[in-house]
Image 1 (tube, rainbow, N blue to C red):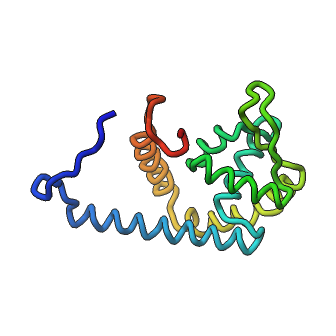
Image 2 (tube, rainbow, N blue to C red):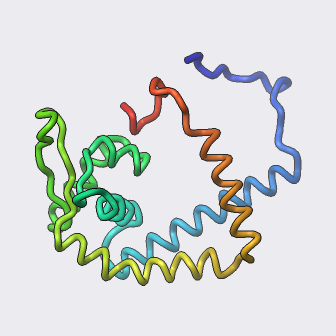
Length: 170
């Protein structure tokens, strides 16, 4: 994959005023939303939003277990960051690690019964926070448009080939 080259200022396709307003509104909203959800989960469950996302992934996985690599890919975080997060979740008794039966070098993260209970207790408040912060402010048409827009952006950024240099694939 060819490395991106630094563009010369005269060759840069600068954002229009409207694009700049849209970009800044997006960044402002994403920052506020992530902070809002993080504070709600810290208050209600003593965990950051990222940890909640890991518990959700495990709860939705067959037998509530995923290879650590798959969990990192799903969370879009490095394996190192995932290892730290799982260690914290293990300390709380919400997750445990097991050696992978198919590959002795790999590990599997398993959601414990206690972790599942924490998730079940926390989910209603989290869903209410998401609904209040996002969906209650949008019309059904805006919700549909936002979903379509975010899908287009994600598809454009998610490489189709396996050789992509993404942190969660290293």
